[in-house]
Image (cartoon, rainbow, N blue to C red; front, side, top):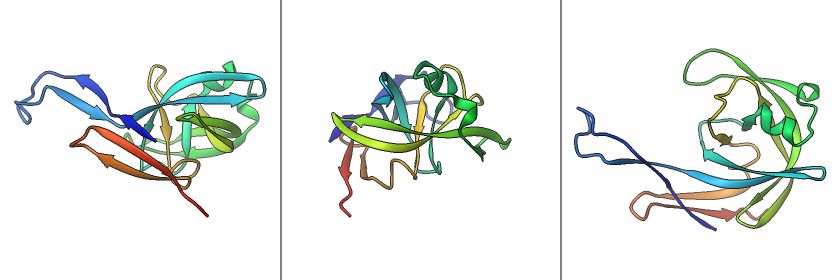
Length: 143
């Protein structure tokens, strides 16, 4: 499966005066829980231990967010946050991946992207980041 990097226009900065845009490895996913499905964009983040989505996504799907397994996590800002792990189905590139553990958190930016991390994403796919072609390739791992 191949996806294009998401492009964001940015003004030049003193450190990067010729830069016109940023590329981010953000891909569309469909999240299903029970009978509900929602589309969401998620950042591929090899520095994240597990997948994390905003708690409002979980609420929309009918997930009792706070009843999940409590999992603390941290990030670049250095303060601890909490996610609640639930099993959901992910559809990536038209392929269904059932029973993926995802943390839903009230501590993420309300209009940000989901995060696809090691457990629940990178353990399923071999990921090839190709900045020159501006694409990401996902190859399901075979066990």
